[in-house]
Image (cartoon, rainbow, N blue to C red; front, side):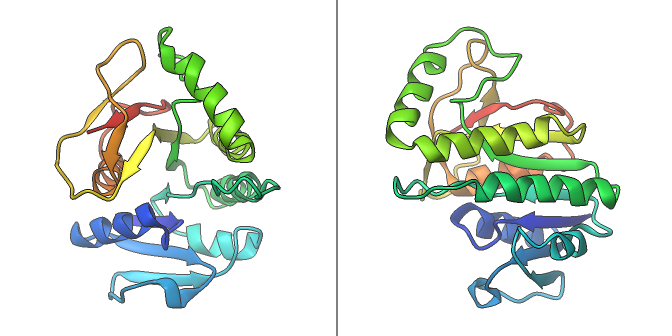
Length: 212
């Protein structure tokens, strides 16, 4: 499968790229700084550009079967602006222009899915995130709404506490108030879940919570 990855030089994005390569996919990655791409591979094409560059984003998604976004906002309290939200809008517009329908990305349980039932995380997490990371929460809301309101065939995995522990292969997924899903999860397992959504139809147009 041909897959375009955004956020390919980040902690989760690098693992997504490696997982895709291990499974034999053809990958295009849009990056600002090609030197940060830690590997070379005949199945990996690097496009240099920023999310604000519509032409570069369109080149990256042209001819692809699916997009995996490992983008996320900065957790620095000093960060301002809507760069990730704006970039996600650009990705969505480019996907529409190039007739690419499948989007797989990340968010947080601070945002609810219609299939959730009432849960303490709905009360606690948005308040905590709003106090500690107000701009990051606003960005996560903006980028999520850009996708869920787009008409694309999306799956957005909600994560709480990514860790650098080794992959376990044990992945819980589901909806708050319905399923027994925890908080912590290794980034390697997050990457595995994202890649698995290329062929797993269970969470089409949904935002499952995932954990180890």
